[in-house]
Image (cartoon, rainbow, N blue to C red; front, top):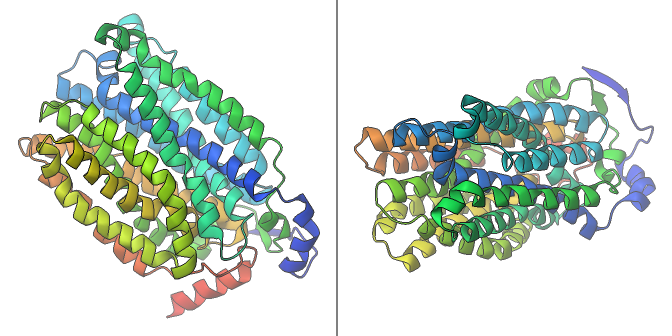
Length: 457
């Protein structure tokens, strides 16, 4: 269903010239994008770490240790259930009325819920209601996160000139390793407390600190104008962008979801699951991995812009496929190296698979996926691709890996095979996607024409 045209201009280029004075500076655009990504991923890494090390004792203390861990990871997965819905709802309004207001709402929902988790009483204080409140906060949080990636990416991408989107989009993605670096660093500092104090109040501090971050992100985003690509677009407004997406771009939607599976599964195997594996089955300290990911996040911050700029030169597919290959090969070596209990080799394999392997994919995902869809479906398409892959590939992965390891008597190989299989699927999907890296994002007709030609071929 389509509504009236929103612009009388016959030329996107002409419209851009009229609206360009209101466009934010590149620095302000990437700062706004970075701020939201930082909040999103600070929460993601923080909750994943707490789900492995703290929540089984705080919120699920009455079950067998393995069952408690599965229940805790189940709460981790619950947030993913709301992400596709958030992507559709925020994408709907972001594609119809604009990006700006959606960006403010998403960052507030995420930050307030993260802060609220730090205030929750545990199971010993209020029983099952502690679990209910934790799940409620996680669901609302997931709803907000569902709309964040699409809007945050487009702030950077729709303000970027053609030929520089990979680079500018990578600055948005830098919020991910920055969130990991800060959340893991603060959590590690809190772990230096005596065990009793850490389990009593120390684990709450990283969640409460998120309140400071969300205020800063809100202040940055509230003064943003609308993106030039949105205001310049002369395409017809879709009454329900999600239905139009399914009807007009279903192929790219499925390929985008498949392409991201390698990234989603790899991270959750080598970090969230691996933390519980080394402590439960190998009897090693969790710091072995936490320190490694702190180092890797610092390295990745510097690598992401390089990968983004590289994709502007050679196209998105070569960079993305290289990242997939590194994750598949690195995944085979990852757990055997962890068993050596050698910090240096452990940290090197984490940097190789995480900073380089997933970094090559993650740095360009915003640009790669955004270039699959026209402007009036882009917020929805970008969000649905990203969040659906998170739900399918990210959410169940820790639970699947724990269940496989338990079923095969502590062997990590079934989880590794699962990782490699997802990498193969993602590689096939990437090969089937056309490269629109040189197309202007305001030129919806050009993207649509390329998509139609690809379907006919």
